[in-house]
Structures are given as C-alpha cells and as structure tokens.
Length: 210
Image (cartoon, rainbow, N blue to C red; front, side):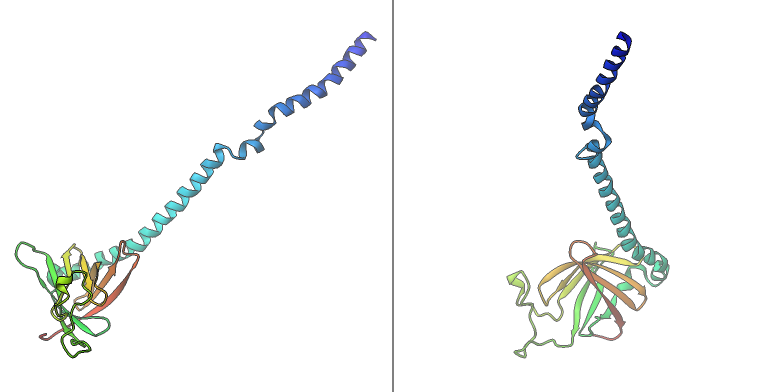
C-alpha cells in the first residue's frame, strides 16, 4: 500500500510540475520569439535590400540601354568627324529656332558652343528684338535673344556630348546630354539633377547661312 500511495502521489505532482514548466518557458516559444524579436528586424532589412537591388537593376536597364546604343553607332559618328560632327546648324524640334554649334577654340579643344542663329519670331510684342528678360542676372537682361549662346558642351566620346543648355523662355539652365543617331539627327536631353527627370528633343541638321 505504501508503494501504491507513493506512485499515486508522484503522478499527482507531475501534472502540476509540467504546468509550471510550460508557464515559465512560454515566452521562449517560437511564436513569442517571432513577435517583436530581432528576427523580424532582419526580415525587414532583407526586404529593403531586395527592393533596393531591384531599383538598381531598373536604373541599369534604364540608363544602360542608351549607353549601349551609343556604343553601337559610335563608329559611324567617329567616321564622320568625331567630336566635330556636332558642328553646324540644327533646327529645333518645334521648328521655331536654329542653333549653330561651333568649336570654342583656343585651349578648350573638344568643347563646343551653341548659339541661336535664327528665330521664327525674333521680335517682341513691341516690334523690337526680343530680349533675354528672364535671365537671372540683371545685367544680361538687355541682351537680344537672337545670337545668344545657349549651349555649352564638351565631347565625352562615343558620339555624345555633355554640358548645359539655357532656356530663354524661363531663364533656367539645365544639364544636357547630346547624342547622334546619324550624321543629320541630334537628340538633346535637358534635365535637372538626374537624367530620369527631363525632356528629350530631336533636332535636324539644316544647311545654309544664318
């Protein structure tokens, strides 16, 4: 009887001990560890890195395509004068102006300027030559727009030029990238900050004196 009573008492104690053990170690269960634990932060970090990698891949596709295209057509550009292929007169996309590119000369070899050689409407509302009234520099606002140098670029190789372009309509200066898809077709992209936020125009070469 004494042995049976001892076994009975031991079995009666075990459930209470097991219950106490579960309560004591409940916070260390997998479910509790998952909530608010460092593991969750690591998962968020991996998600951020995944999104960042996809963004970088998208940028490579977006900006790498034009670069590869320039490499393909660069031999043609090099064969027709290289950096000086840009020299000449170009009709803007709207057809309201002609920009003449010429070599800056001197020590600035490979650098070119673009001036407004012709305007469809060279005069203002008062019948006089239109002035650069929106220029941020007050001293330059009395200069006529016709003949104004609005593009400053340098040859960057592979049939492309980089620099700045000035817009007399609003007095702002933008970064610009110029590429050529042929001897008589020029693409100028003006942008602020990065090339993604900008606008591209196609200009055609024109012959004649302006």
